[in-house]
Image (cartoon, rainbow, N blue to C red; front, side):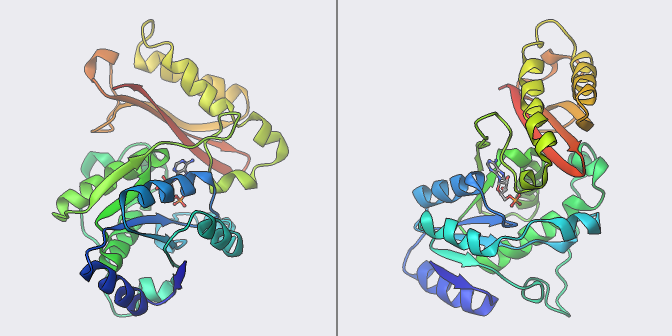
Length: 282
Ligand code: AMP
């Protein structure tokens, strides 16, 4: 695996690979890698000739400075994991390579209602920062394919909208959620859960699954109320449990309103914020 810290060096390497006809796959991450990330690398390796993984904890997408400071950083272990799955390139830039002083990297895109709900409501500015860094990394790397996880369902919808608005030809590939044996969605934040909260955390996925079984009997808002109460009773403080159309991300009033229904939730276990989702229909 080649490791690049400087944009110019990475671009020189990739230009050469592109000129010789290689398809470039890209997996952006914030590090503290786990099997979920590695599944994206594996899918990229299957569908591309050269797989580039980036590790960059992007300061502009954290609306809470404490969350940025507490974000786990495990570069040595990450390098070992990436090597174990034969990643071709790791891009590990310092902040000034991604945001060089004097370069305007702001994106002025309008994500409309997509960015106003769920994560957009509880993490103001998060998606502007996320889109900014993803677009900047895409501009640096110039991949043919971009691999992202269904785990961050709303993020994918925003990136899809961004690629459309920027008239980009990059193919966006959604990769399924990888879970721990007890059903908890793998996340870099899981290591920060206390043993007590870690033991209870699978309740998030269980609640999503039980909620899905209620489709025939209850309205979406009744299911939402039940799910919020279930999570609260177990001390996993939910911020939202929204049942939405999978394309527009807007809440549905009846399960008949959409052919593609997804339930998305965010909940706090102590000071750790976890997200998860489950496709109910479609
Ligand atoms: P992050 O490092 O959290 O920014 O995630 C980098 C990429 O990995 C994003 O596209 C995530 O959606 C994806 N990802 C994170 N956790 C999982 C998981 N458990 N299963 C599949 N993909 C994941």
